Length: 261
Image (cartoon, rainbow, N blue to C red):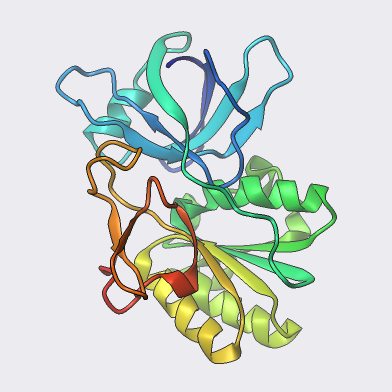
């Protein structure tokens, strides 16, 4: 599939909101799904998986939004593309959040740029009248993504920075635990490093709370062929993050065998 770079705006330190007009899009992307975006440099043959941050189907061409950070040759190559240029993409891929969470309140917990699929989900849930809150955690305040960029009400977004430069001084997990103790719980949905998800799983298990996770993984193909993104399952065997996920009920995952991040 071909896409055209419509807009690229820096919204935090080396983090960009990227809007792509996609040709031949067969279905509307849903929260939790992702695209493989291919760097234009010929020697970089593998796509980079990017969660969908937003979607606008109102124009002549559907526009898919992503949050993309400069982290290496692949993302640098994509972000160096000039406005109007073509980029090869495949998507939407993967499964989605099912929308049935079994509680009146939903807490979304994002570690770093795991905020991208969760912001998309939160806008959807608020549109349905679901009582939803977002907790996002970063190492420093310069990385923080504002509620205006996320398209979310400021009074429903709580931020944590490990260096204390903005918001709560601590981690997203610590802030989530404080909020859970204050409010009495609810379903938790999280995306971020494996260490954060593992800590949330242990505490949710102790409290009898449901946890849904969107897993991050290195991917080769994006549609289940290469098995580079396999994760261990609690019942034995493995699941492919790109094909069977990236969204899982946390009870499905063998957290003791999952590699730390």
